[in-house]
Amino acid sequence: MLYGAMSIVTLACSNSKESEKATEVSSAKPNIILIYTDDVGFGDLSVYGGKIATPNIDKLAADGLLFTNAYATAATCTPSRYSLLTGEYAWRAKGRGVAPGDASALIRPGVETLPSVLQRAGYRTAAVGKWHLGLGGDEGPDWNGELNPGPLEIGFDYSFIIPATGDRVPTVFVEDHHIVGLDPSDPIEVNYRKKIGDGPTGKDNPELLKMMWSHGHNHSIVNGVSRIGYQTGGEAALWRDEDFAQTFVDKAAAFIKKESDKPFFVYFSTHDIHVPRIAHEQFQGATDFGPRGDVIVQLDWQVGELMKLLTEQGLEENTMVIFSSDNGPVLDDGYVDQAVELKADHVQGGGLRGGKYSAFEAGTRIPMIVKWPSIVTANSRTDVMFSQVDFLGSIAAKMEIPYDTIQAVDTENHWGVLIGKESTGRASLVQEALFSNLAYLRSDGMKFIPGNNGPDMVPWGPIIETGFAKTDQLFDIRTDPKELKDISAAHPSVVEEMKKELSDIVNN
Ligand code: NG6
Ligand code: CA
Image (cartoon, rainbow, N blue to C red):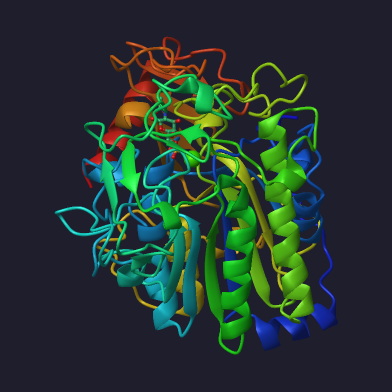
């Protein structure tokens, strides 16, 4: 199903006196849970036309507001997360592309962040799940010592994370400043340049794998899966991929139960549906779509568990739940998990062109739902353009908390759009694709992809068009939502205008 061509905001009306009263009582400082999923495409959820049933996520939409023109800032994880948390486009400095698992902290103490704004508003804040924004100072992470700086130094009161993604070493959980369950007599060592220790690798010992690699991902084997990077030691601390979902739900639940006498913010960053797609045993085989289907079902289960908790704790009415994804979808992203073979009629990008890594729409247009029963109209829908870089500015404005506008230079206040009460959003946004190439989209539907020398297909395994061409491209995504017709030759003045606008933003 393709929503791109819709042009009016449709908001169901239910403005009773009752709901206005509730608004006054509860709207000042709602709890906020941001469920930030990984690689979930615009068409991956059943509420967006996906073939795999996601009843709990669909229920969020039935209870809240569904976005059809919401965007991550980038088509990969690290830059999207960087921008979401800081309110600054990641491409403004080098070194903010997909981070290796031993990267230093990309967001340093003192930098303005969404959680630090919320701390100043009196919130208790937690980061649970995938991090992928680096840990430690310039010398890199001290895995056997204190992992500092990390989430706690940039606005989170509590963190329980995996350092990067499931496909990268070290394969351990980190709680606050330390690896969980590390035995000091068996220190862990990590190396991204050369093999260390005498453990098996995916390259040399494929017979030990429960899921074969397809490209990259053939270094150290942990839990029957080979990863990117080499690792040795730390045996007692090594994770089981199957346990991610339950572990994250438990950690978030414990935080919420402990902190619910104050407003709280939980950045619940699921590993699903990133590779390796190893669902818990209870979800394995849940659909006919293979491991990618399993982890979509597991993702939906996590949403259901969190919503159940809110209801049990009496927190549902005044908790704003935001559900979104960090970038678009990919099928084969490095493991042989039959995502391509079993896809059948599921259209992960919802009919948009491209996918993860791409400058085309499927790279950054992502699912987004906001549920907040006391404020947001149930079963409503908006096609107003929204960028995740605006969470900071919007929430800060709502809380009336000043923030560092020099650092958080790209964020704007679109609170009204976020809660479905405003039909004008930002005028334009920048989309970061592979190799930091940029595309530029205006709210009038004009999309400009500057000419560049990048490859036209992602140059390793995934069969995805990058959207790059040697010459400038122009699309009108209102009339051509699949970006099939480059109209740059017919509209040279629009190309020039947009080139100038993009250059002004880049040089700001
Ligand atoms: C790529 C990995 C891919 C994934 C991606 C980051 C290879 C061949 N591919 O380099 O598997 O890890 O990085 O994904 O190594 S992201 O969602 O975290 O940005
Ligand atoms: Ca991602």
